[in-house]
Amino acid sequence: MTPIYTVNPKNFTTILKNHRYNWNEFEKFRDVTKGSFVDGISQLKKYFNHFGYLMAEDMDSTDIFDANLENAITRYQAKLGLPVTGKLDSGTLSEIMSPRCGVPDKPPEKLSDMQRLEYFTGRPRWARSIPMTLTYAFSPSNFITSLSMQDTREVFKRAFGHWAAVIPVTFLEANDYGFADIKIGFYSGDHGDGEAFDGVLGVLAHAFSPESGRFHLDAAETWAVDFKTEKSEVAVDLESVAIHEIGHLLGLAHTSVKEAVMYPSLKPRQKKLDLKIDDIKGVQALYGSNPNFNFQAFSESDISSNDAVDFRIRSEICFIFLLVLILWL
Image 1: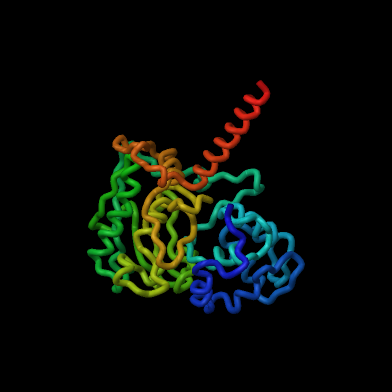
Image 2: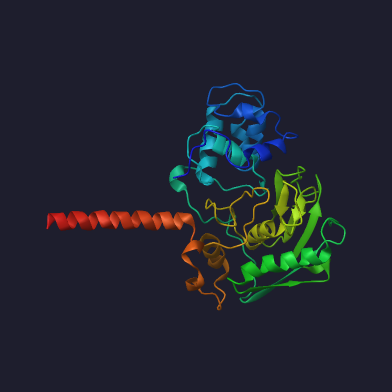
């Protein structure tokens, strides 16, 4: 069971401190419930609207915690695997404050509609014959100088390799940015795609569904390829973010499985480099399996915790059923 925090969860204070440019006195929202009036609630409504939990027609600009906001919080908690309380508890606030992908989530309309594997509307994919090759290139004019080009290229080669290992798609770096299928660049603030970046932490990156191929990273972040040399407490692992956004480029939306790379948030100095069963099943449903990939190669630890919980519950039910049957006989 996911714990309900009564004190600041791990990383909450660090995240909070580095978001004060965006969320002044964020602690005041803790444990606020429906009917409350708190200065700044209107900003929370904008957050939930941006990420798909609160429709424009259901929100207003007041600082009243209304029923629509409570419903948005409930759906947010359900989508992200949090205790569903409808309240702004510490665990929920910590998740809201966590750096994350800028792509909106696909929350369930009803809690009974909850599912883990998600795709963009219409389940778009790259419409080419299998096996296919996709090219990628880096913008020559939208780059960062804090990382060497060699390090960046190696990171992205590994990131694409994670997906290529499980589906029949080959990713090749191209020299011609203009003709590449996937175009990668680092941008600041409003960069013309309607999804402005917000500075340090907050939104880390975003990518568009097939076959757009646009992959944008926030240039304001402290991007890291090695936490041993990058000591900043707000450093973000470039490879982890790259793997996640490539999932979007291939057609995957966000998942509710926290261990999966397609989970929307990533804490500072956190790494998520291994595809989980949830990620693999999702992308293989779109492209099929790499003929060299074998599920048997995965150890038990690679199975998502949700799968493990499901298995444990099924095992307990079977045990109880057998016990009842034995006693009845």
